[in-house]
Image (cartoon, rainbow, N blue to C red; front, side):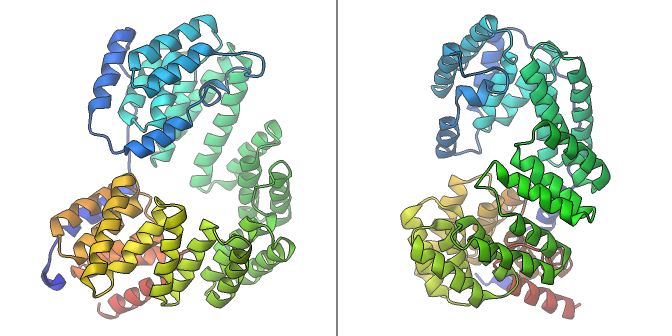
Amino acid sequence: MHLSTSKISLASSYSLYLRALQQISTFQQPQRLTNWGVLASVLSLLALLPSSVSAQQNNTALSRLTTEVLIGRAVSLSNQSYPDIENAIQRFRNNDIQGALLFLEKASKKHPNLPPVEVTMAKMQTLKRNSKAVRVLLESAAVKYPSDPEAFLILADQAFAGGRTTEASALFEKSDAMNQQFDKNAKRKRSFVIRILAGRAAVTERRQQWQQAAKLLKEWVELDPENTTAHQRYGIVLFRLKKTSEAYEQFIKSREGNSKAQNPDILMGKLYAQKGDKIQARKAYEKAYAEEKSNLITTQAYAEWLIQDEKLNEAENVILEVLKQDPESIPSLTISSIISLMNGKSDQAEKTLQKILTFAPSNATAINLLAQLLIERNDQSAQERALSYAQNNARQFPNSSQSNITLAWVYYKQGHLQQAQSALNAGLQRGGLTMDSTYLVARLMAEQGRNEPAIQALTQVVDKNGLFVHRKEAQELLTKLQAEK
């Protein structure tokens, strides 16, 4: 099928893209659920609904489900065992919801300091990404335990993650007011204080209210001085306030208790790059690399920056040195494949991506890049392989916007318009598009003659900092479309 005459409904799809940036939701008070049998039945019915999460993802998530994950913030685990919690976890893994609830209730009666049963079950359901069940449980807990802040705090986190900033702010404030009156468990109360400070700060950071954010983050680092994330976020806000030396001090502190944290100069380099100060960014990155050539995280960050600064040959030399020491480093191999792609060395990129898949057969980034690479070839066999890769990736990672957008592009290139439409909508509904995904959406629009929204999408990404594989192509397409106006 000739692509120039093919049509898919991009108008409705692009509206999804815009709405994803402006989602608004309202919080509604739940009806009370007090009977465990009724609650178990509701959760069991929700579990039967079509899931957007693969079995493999569920198994991986459940492997992370431990007693410490569930109740570690509520009680000390050093001198106390919780066999009922362990039993609840096992029942949950076996899809015995009612059995899990009964063991959680039993544990709660023995240990009143534990979180409400519904809250603990909500955390378990969160690992399975069963959002409907999580909502039912949290709304039940919010009514049943009106003096316990945790249900509202989790709802606040979810609202923030979903882009509903005003709702999140209101829920964090409500959680804060509730926590001031909460006196049932000192360890939980302290945990709530930290989570509330982190959440309220995140709201002000998103709104670029830097002075307010700095005040909240200062409280957090004083209360939790070993928290790497707290120091890093505080440092970023101080940088926004043009307090660069104080920001650097926070980045140093962020690493004192965590050797795997990023080099302070790498963090400063990223901030200078975002600011558009290439001179200071280069100084910071080169200082970090000179001091820590043997540190894989530092070296990879330096190579990524060189790519962004269009120093592909320098980046390649850096990564080749790393691969001499660790030829199976997947992050380094991924960067190497990206350099090959950006240098137009398609065969070399394919070879490197295939090597990644021998070590990590489910690596989503490698599979997406392979699918995008192969679909551009004028070779039916290569295009069929592209479709197979894209389909498997979207099946394995259904919540990934990148995988769905890649699948949409592959379908479109092969003339499967209905499937392309479905995959495109799925990708846009997930939100959080990468720069490369946005570029593919723009290409779809341009292919369909929708130049204005294509220009709008491309304008959002061409000058953004970050690793952008198709930056050159995006800029060329934007220039072409603007010239045709």
